[in-house]
Image (tube, rainbow, N blue to C red; front, side):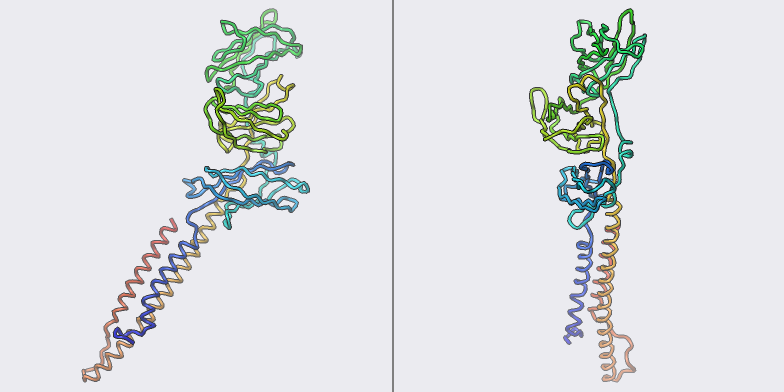
Length: 446
């Protein structure tokens, strides 16, 4: 025992216990909890159809009110209905998005899929994915094709866009179908004029003269000059009839042309990249993001495929990787004989099937509880050690005072002893530790 009245073990306890307690509290905050919430959303197409599956993953971090994109290395594990498991490793882009292709084993029948998305040992999303084709098609968007408008006369006049919609300032193929009494009206002269667009082969008055073929159809090209355009078809006597309707024009956007097993991607608005996916009646597959390069007056790129799906299928394209925003266009990919008719633009976005936010917040809450229990246990242990040192020190101090009182023959033993100076230090350190713990808890539970 030294001059301070404390044994060596007590002095070392007072010196080290508070530091160890604070270290335990800090370790529980840093090691036992994640720095921020990280989760992911998974979007999928129908799972009850044969063929490969293409899912979209969107990784997020931070608060759900203000989520931020996260570039992460992820692992997707999918267990199919037949029991086979497929694992894919991939990285998200700068926006936190990625398209993942899952090859369904040939022996497995279509059905629900159990999916788990991880970042290392942390689960960002998990659950069962079960999307029927009927549910998936409920979100389809069809646009363009045969135009709506006002008709007059005995001749039924139909006006359509071969590729579904018209991009502003981009030439588009049109078709007119004439019939009377339910039968095609062949070799019928008529005229076409447009307001807000230019018809190929039109005269100085903006009017083009055409004649229907044996099937009662005629084809021409039109280029919009305004964002809103009207097309008028007039059939002269003795079959005097008239049709007037609005053209389905889209601003900007990316156009896709088919040349054999190649797709030509083009844009007039200076876009640097585009995301293209092939859409069939059974779902979306083969999604690619391609960089566009300057070519003449537009930006373009060429995508090569070993083979393309059987008709009907669509190339859905957008400047955004999600392929479900308003500027996403589904261009019908037509063979030569199909270009004589009008077709709609067709888009069916993948559906949100898993949202890992609830799972992640539940895990973070469990981590905070474990950290709170660990910090509380460490604080109680430090408090117990301090109490042990203070009690032992004060008992010895009181005994020494009583012994001194007897030696100097005072009236009686003193019932009060001056507390050891280390006791005050212990109380201060313990109070500081309590404040630090409360502060950390306040920050962690916000």
